[in-house]
Image (cartoon, rainbow, N blue to C red):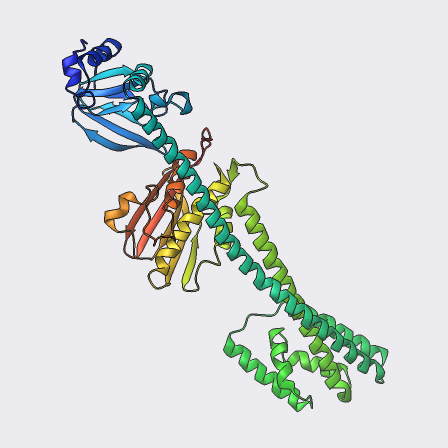
Length: 478
C-alpha cells in the first residue's frame, strides 16, 4: 500500500522527524494491511519493526504451553517487533512476544536493518544512552542475582552446619558414655567370673545377654504413661530381689523393651547371691546397645544431611537431566530445616505416581528455596506459627508443584508486581527483590513452564507447572 510521509509523521513515534527523514522512512519501509490473525510469533527472527496506523492489536507472551495476553489496544502508533535492532549482533535478535490483529489493521513496516541504521544515524547520543541502560541493567541484574545466590548459599551453609553439629555432638557424647559403660561391664564380668559358676550357668548368662541385645533393637514405642507404669513395676521387682538402686536401672530396661518376664528368666539362670551382679552386667549390656544405637542414628543423620546437600547442589550431576521432583523437594526441605522455626509445621502431599521430568535440577532447587523461604518469612512475620504444605500432582498434562502457606497473604495491590526485578516487601537489607524474578525466569524461560500465585489471607499458593516431556533447553543465563 502507498506510504504517505504525512500519515507516518502523524504517528507519535515519528512526529518530531523532519520531512527529509520521513521521506527516507517511507522510501525504505512500506505500509501493509493485515487481516485478522498473526503478524509475528515470539522466538522467530526479528526482521521488522511494526507501527500500527489503524486497527487493533493483541500482544502476548508464551508461558509454558500457553499464550498469555499482555496488551490489547487500538491506539494509533503502538509498535512492536525488532525494537532492539540498534544493538546489532550483541543481542540475539528475536521477537520477544507475539502480535496478532483482531480486525483488518494497517501497519507501517520498517526492516530491522533500516531501523537500526536510522536510529544510529539520527540519534547517536540516544543510542549510547540506550545501550548503556540495556547492558548496565542486564549486568546489574546478573551481579545482584549472583549476590542473591551467594546469600542463599551462606544462609543454607549456616543452617547445614547447625544441623550437622547436633548429631555430631550426640555421637561424641554417646561414644564417651559407651567407653565408660564398656569398662564397667568388663569389671562386672570379672566379678561374675570370680564366683563359683558352672559352665552351664555362664553359658545361660551369655545366651540371655544375646537375647537381651536382640530385644533392644525391637523395643516397642511406649506412651509416657505406659513407660512410667512399666518402670514402677520393674523397680518393685528389683527391690524385692535385693537389688539396690533398682529404680535407676528400671528406665533403662523399659527403654530397651524388657519386662518382668525377662527378669524372671535372669533370676532362674543364676543363683540368688549373684543376681545383683548379673542384673548389673546385663544393665550395662542394655546401655551399651542403646548407646551404639544412638551413635548409629547420629551417623545416619549426618550421612542423610550430606546426601541432601549433595542432592541439593547437584555438583556431581549433569546440568540437564530427567529428575524426580520429590527428591529435589526433600533435599531442599532438609537444607532449609534450620531456617524453619519450631512453630511452622511441614506437610507433604506427594503424588508418588508422577513420572520423572526433564529439568535443570540445581536451578529447580533454587526455585524451591526461594518459594519456601518466602513462605516461611511470611509466616514468621505473622507470629512464627503456621503450616507449609508442599503438594505435587498432575495439572492438564503438566507436573504441578505447589507451596501453600497460612501467612497473611499477598496484598492485591502488589500481586501483579511480585515477579518484577528488585521489587520486595522486606525491610532494607533483608531482600534484593530478585528471588521471585529469578524463579520466574528459571521456570518460564529455561523450563518452558508456568509460575503463578493465588493468595487470600491465610491461604497463599505458589504453583510451578513443568512440562512432562523434554523441550529444547534454553541455555541463556537466568
